Amino acid sequence: MIIKLVKKVLKDQRNSLIFWSLGNVFVATYVTQLFPTVQKSAASLKQYIESMPESFRSSFLGNADFTTPEGYLTAEMFSFMIPLLFLIFAVTFASSAIAAEEEKGTLEVLLSNPVNRSKAVIGKFLVLFIDLIFLAAVLLVATGVGISLVNMDIDFYFIVDMVISLVLLTLYFGSLALSLGCMFGSRAISASLTGVVGVGTYLINAFAPSVESLQKFQKFSPFYDYIGINPLINGLNIKNAFDLVLFSAIFLIAGLIVFQRRDLKI
Amino acid sequence: MDNSIISTSNLTKFYGNKRGIISVNLNVLKGEVFGFLGPNGAGKTTTIRLLMDFIRPSGGKALIFGMDSKNDSVAIKKRIGYLPGELHLYENLTGRSFLRFMADLKGGVEWDFVNGMADKLKAELNVKIKSLSHGNKQKISIIAAFMHKPDLVILDEPTSGLDPLIQLEFHVIISEFKKMGKTVFISSHNLGEVEKICDRIGVIKEGKLIAIEKVGTLKDQAIRRVEVYFAGPVDQRDFARIEGVTAIEIKDKVLNCVVVGSLDQLVKVAAKYQVVDIVSHEPNLEEIFMNYYQGNDN
Image (cartoon, rainbow over all chains, first blue to last red; front, side):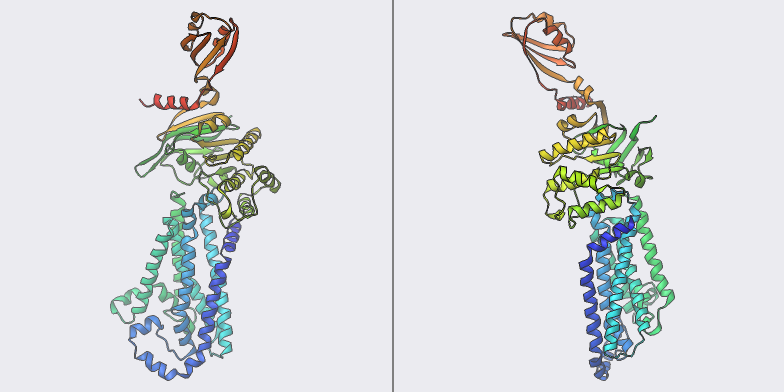
C-alpha cells in the first residue's frame, strides 16, 4: 500500500526533481571550475576576506580558508548555496506533502481507501528521503567530476561525509515542515514556521562565534550539527549527525501523533 | 442475527461549541438503500465524515460491519466505497491512472468490471482529469466508489450537479448493487431522488435524527388530493363515512376530497357508481418531510 503511494508521489514530482538536480549540477560545476582562477588570486583574496568583519566571514563564508580546496568548497558550496537549494526543495515538498492534500481536498480521496493516516505520512516521508538521496547522489557525482577536472587536492570521502551531513540537515527541516503540515493542515503555516526556525538557527550558528550571548545556543542549532565541526576537514561527526537524526525522528513522531488524532479539515 | 451494517449509538459531534450532530442513533440494515435526508447544515456530512473516520466523535460511537469506525477504520474501508459530496481528484492524472491508483490502494479490483462501468457511464479515461467537465469527473468518482464491489457504499449528495442521463445510469448501478445484497447509504436533500431509490429514510434536523421510516410507510401516511369523475350524480353521505377522507366536495358529478393514507376504501365506495376517471395527485414527500419538521418543532 505504502509503496503504491510512494511510487505515485515520486512520479508526480519527476519534473521538479530533474529541475533541482540541474540546479545542483550547475552550482557544483560552476564552483569547482572556478577554483583555479580563485587560487591564482589567493593572496589578494585572502587579504580582502580578512578585512571583512568576523561575523560576516563566519556567517557567509563558513569562516574557512578560501584558498584551500576544503575552505573553498565550504565557503562557496556547503555553507550557504547548496544547503539553501536542498532546504528550499525539502521544505516546499514537505510542507505541502500532507497539508496541500488536505487544503485541496484530495486527502479525502486518499483516505477513503484502506490507508492508515500514519502510513500516508510515512509514505510522504519516504519520498522525501528518496528525493534527498537522489539529489545527494547527483551532487556527489557533479562535485566529484568537477574536482577531478581541475585536480583539486581533496579527499572525495570527505565530500561524501559533507553530503551525508547535508542530507541529515535537510531531513531535519523536511521532517519539521512535514510534521507542522500534519499538525496544522496548512502549507502556509508549515512553510513559514519552518522558515523562521531555519533562518533563526542559521543566524545563531553564524553569529555565535562573534556574539557571546549566542554562544550557549549555538550547539542547539542544526546548522552547527551540520557544519560546526566541518565534515570536509574532520569527516562526519557522529554525535552531531546523530542529533540531526534524533530531532528529525522526534519531529516526525510528533507530527504522526497529532495527525492520527485530530479532525481532518476535509 | 444482527443484520446491521451501520449502527451508531448516541453519536455526537461538536466543533468547539458549534453543533455538528447530537445523539444520533441510526441502524442501517444489510441489503437496504438508506436515504439520509435533511437540509444543508443539518448534520448529514458530519455524520458521513464520522463514519469515514475523517473526524472523531465527541461522544457515542459508530459501528460499521460491527467494527469501531475509529479503531478499525482501515479494515472497514476495505469494504466501503465512498463518493464525496465535493470532488477533489488528482487533477494531473488521467482518469485511468487515477482509477489504477485507487485500485492499487483498495486491492482486489477486477479491471474488467471497471471497464464495464466506464463503458456504461461513457466515462472518458484517457484524458487528464483537470480537463474533464464536472459530469465526467463525477463518472470517474462513481467508478472509484464501486470498483471494488464494496459491501457498503456511502454517497454524500451524489447527484448534486449530475447530468440527468448519468443520474439514470447511476440509479441503475445502485439497484444492481442492491440486488447483489450490498448496502447503500445515501445522503441527499433531494426528496424526489431518495423516494425513487431508497427503502428507508432517516430525517435529520439541526443535528438530531427526528424520524426513520420506510419510504412505503411515509407514502402511506401521505396526504393526497383525489378527484373522482362519475357518469351520474352521487350521494355525498356515502363518502363522508369513510375514515381518512375529508374535505369532500361534489360538483357536477365530480368528487373532490383529501385522503390520508390508502385509497382503498374510497375506491370501494366509489365503485358503487359508474366511475369515469380517478385523478390522484402523487403524494409529495416534501410535504411529509415538512410535516415531520413542523411536527417536531414544538
